[in-house]
Every structure is written in C-alpha cells, then in structure tokens.
Image 1 (cartoon, rainbow, N blue to C red):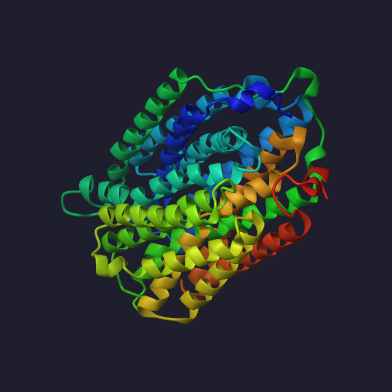
Image 2: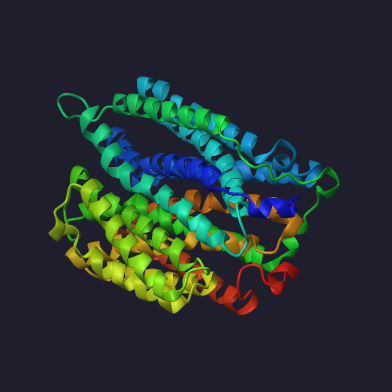
Length: 473
C-alpha cells in the first residue's frame, strides 16, 4: 500500500513521533473526561445508569458512524487518506474535535442534556478521524516489527492524559467551576471545554509547522472493494477491538459509581476521582513497560533494567498527581510486579502477551464481583494496568500483513470502537436491574473474547508481519 522508498528507512522520525505523541496525550485527556461527565450529568439531570451511559453511546457511537462513512468511501472511491495525506487527515480530525468542545458552551448555557450528547457526538467524530489517521501513521514511522512497541509508547502518553483528566478535570468541574453553594450546575462544564478546544487548536498549529513525512499510495495502487475482509485475523481483530474498548470504557465509566457503593468503599465523587486516576494511571505504566518489552531490538537484561526504571518513574508521577497517600496507592506495587511477570512470560510476543493480560483481567473482574471493601476496589483498579497493551496489540495484530488494504483495515478496526458505545449501555441496564457490582459480568465476557483472539493469533499468526499474516489466513 505504501510507497516507501528504501531511502526513507534511514530517516529520523523522532520529531514527527514526538509531535503525534503530544496529540495522543490531548485526546486521551479529553476522552477520559467522559468518566467525570457521567456521574456529574447523572446527578445534574437526575438520570438512571442507563440514561447516563448515553454519554458513552453518543461519543463512541460517533466512532462507528465516522469509520463506516470512511470505509464506504474507501471501497467506492479509494482511500481518502492516501489521496489527501496523513497530515491533512490529522488536521481535519483536530479541528472537528475542537468544534465539538466548543459546542459544550451552548449545551451548558441552556442546560439541555441532548445538546451535551450532540457535542459529544461531534467530538467523537473528530477523534474517529484521528484514530484512523494517527494510529496508522505511527505504525508507518518505522519497521512493521516494532509497530506494537511504537504504538504502546504513544498510547502510554495517551494514558498519561487519561491519568491526569480525572484529577484535573474533576477538580475543574466538581470544585473550581462549580456553583458557590456547591450545587450541581451545567455551567461548570463551559470554561473547561473551551480551554480544551484552545489547546487542541494550539496542537493543530504546532503540527502545521512541523514537517511530517508523507506516506501516500501511488494513484495506480489505490484499491477499491472489500478486499480487507478476506483476512480472517482482521475480522476477528475487529470483534476483539469491539470487546476491548467496550470493556475498558464500561469499567472506567462505572468506577466512581462502584466506589460509592456502601459495600465497597462508600466514597463520594471528589475522593473517587483520584482512584479513577489510578485506574488510568495503571494503563500508563503498562504501556511504557509494553513499549520496552515489545521492542525486540533490546536484550532481555536491558529490558529488565529499563522496565524497572520506567515503572518506578511513572509510579512516582502518578503519586504526585493523585491526592492520595503512599499507603493508599502502595497496593499498586503488587500489580506492577505481576505486570512484570506477565510481560516476561509473554516473551515480547504481542499475541501471547495479549492473551495473558486478558486472562488476568477476567480474574480481577470476578474478584471485584464477589468480594467487598478494599479487595474489590483493588481488583477493579488493577484492570487498568493489564488493559495497557491491548489496544496497540489488537490493532497491530488485526492489520498485520494487509498490504494495500492497511488503511481500509484500519478503518474497520477503528469502527469497532463502537464497543465503547454499546457495552456500557448494556452494563448500565444491568446496573439498574441487579446493582453495579453484578453488572461487571458484561466486561468479563469482553475479556474472554480478547483472550481467545490472543490464543488464535499466537497459533495462526505467530508474530506480526510473518508470512501467514501476509497471506491472510
């Protein structure tokens, strides 16, 4: 698919990668703000769990609509990104996302829930374009064998944004911009989202000034039709991505409500947001470790040293961010050690590592469902660190060996982010009927699918980029 001359292999892609990483950070931050909006809007508009999950339904539903439009265009007229270029695609996505943030101002002014949902839908469309363009672009900034490692690194900074969002965003909405009497008011969301729009536009300005390498298909190589669907591992990967995003978003969306339960911890929103930050902070730790572990150019001895240093550094960053004591977050050290062990058992193989992490999350979810108090809380928070490498590994395994169908396959995988819209809705319904704790049975099934996908890829693909993947079997 890509007209990548031999001379481009020797290019230094550091500056483009840093620039795109900054973008990953910002959209991670804004995406995680949904977890703050859900309990906030639930109280403001007196919503049920099901109704409050429409936040995720509209936001992640936009991923499906946007990706479907992209896919239909690609099979009828050729890949739009190959024609316009990745830089233009990224810029368009940023402007669309910024517009979605700006729409929060009228939604908050009129205090009308459907307007909030509309703003979230536009914001989600912008991030859809970014997912299709930026993820594929990062995978092209180097060899295919190291694509998982690069995506894990950029996703680590995406997770850094999701770690900061609950603390900073929660402070802005629940405290700083809240009504003087402490009551809930939609106005508290106006200024924060205008700030987010401004930052996105500044990132767009920076990207416009940076020279990004152009990876475009020659005109005669542009393909139409449904060729990407001939690859069985892509179809399975699309379903696995649906389940991953659905499971991750559902768990994150319910953490504040879960910790509010009297049989769990009985925390209020102001305290719970710090623990929500730990959930996403775990993903950040795991992605930095994954970027090192899945880099096959580093020896095992050096990997252990680098991973230990990275884990300690990121743990201290999280400790400095959250408003919790060391004793309150020290339990995370156990999960970091378990994460180390899982990575070394995975032996830098993306598929094997994926299946191991999915199996651990199944066990953690079951523990959260059957236990009470701190054990249940620790179990649910520990899921974040084992979510860490899932997006990157599912994505790269799914599009492995697609050749000229890579962008088309990428749009299908991004379309599967629809899981973030559908799964929380089902969990919300179960929470209304049977309680929050029992509703986590839904993510259990999601991670079981990911476990099976990891085993499938271990058996049939072997590793990213091998001949079986390229043949589409």
